[in-house]
Length: 405
Image (cartoon, rainbow, N blue to C red):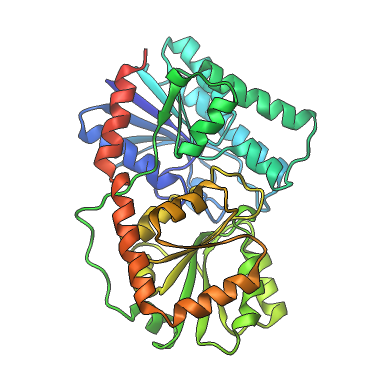
């Protein structure tokens, strides 16, 4: 069986969608599937290509046995809705030519966003006479409209038309949450097309954890401080302003809010920290590898935040890694969204609605003096994450691919 996975993110990117495309391709190769990846040159989450990639149109890398075919894409220095659209469109355009030059696959797996990959996948499928699976990691039009990044107009109608076209032409439509599948049904996708394909995590053969205190010592955080940490993409969707608004309410407590990451909102957040003169907020670069593991060891609680209006299907992949490490989680999200409902089901933390800094501050103050409660949340998270074990999830998806007509 030959499978080509087609998406804009892949290694060496280590956050966001990329790790899951990597895991899928490497799993397929391990199962004897002839799997290859069509992707862009690495840019996320810093929104900057590496110097050696900037003048390249195409290149093929071999990463852990997976052929990775890269295509040029425009990467804006400043991210806006219009520039993001051009960024995605440029990748879809160049990568379509690249994929047409490769031998035909039995099935193509398209990872969205970009949403416009659906049209390209249909075109390639027509030429190559092969079906495609449209795998949705983010309900892009719904989130953009909900966040106010796009207003109702002819353009949003065009985006929804693109979305409907992709769902109609795909042999299967897969999503990472049950809420996404419900959303697809509401958009008219037939039940027989729907596939539940959540992000997954390897729970065995994990590397030994760094020593307790390594992260604190490196960054000058006191051993007695309660560390509440956000680590990941710093974008509009994350709504991280609420952490800055919470900080002044905790000035007299030994509680430090740490924001680690990169993204479109990093400079804005850093400027706000300086303007507000927040001594109990620290901003650090994106942590990777052992540094990220050391962060998790020393974190007392980890944040996952979501801006109001970002969509009810939001379920960040990094949650699985936090639960696998038995970390208590504090979410900031609408109570009816997938993230908050999962937390309620798994009882691995507490959710606070967006825009409630006083409630968030009171919660952190309570948790800082309740280690038993924190330990209970951590143990519950470790139990909850078992359902996302990589082998089980990917084997189920491989069966679905084998059944694609």
